[in-house]
Amino acid sequence: MTPAVSIRVLIVDDHALVRTGLRLLLDREDGIDVVGEAGDGDDGVRAARLEKPDVVLLDVVMPGRTGIDACQEVILASKGKVLMLSMQDDPSYVREAFAAGASGYMLKEAADTELVQAVREVARGGRYVHPTLGARLAQAEVEAARRAATDPLSEREREVLRLLALGNTNQEIAAQLFISVRTAETHRAHIMQKLGLGTRAELVRYALVNGLLDEA
Image (tube, rainbow, N blue to C red):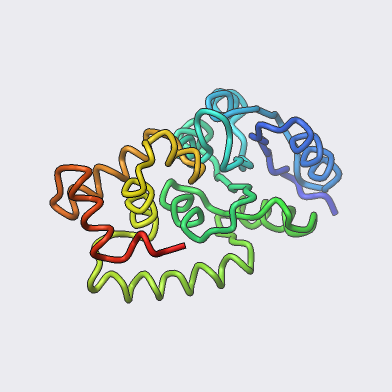
């Protein structure tokens, strides 16, 4: 039986083939209606404001403005929920997505049925995380809590600090971690503040002393 009210979905991804595939998959489902597409974060915000979708499928890595950077504005514009889509299976991306306001995070490699399930769950007001990622995230949280007792930096901040100590610019760090330059700059500012450091030389010294340059 077809639900009385359809779930309105907006697809935001920089790859046209991905958008087409997602639209074909979702349009064949009862109770789900794809109301629009966008190819980047800024167009996604505009489409969200125009279409007022219930769920926005938002790609994490896009040229210019990343999905995580655009997430909060998309939510405000649509008054709906965001389900992040990504090739990135690092738990730090999951945490950043939820911190930005996302209601779900799933990998693009997931099965068709999982995407449909995730869309319906998020539309109902629930949260969804790819099962494998959920287990990995739980383990990462345990490790982060253990490290927090002696290390003030988050996992992502440690990675940014390591790359800074290796001589990378904010632009290079952003490219390597699939984040925006603004986010990289924000991480750097937080690191300096937490550690009470003022120069790159002090950052390098801290990284050396704490073995960050030995990490893979």
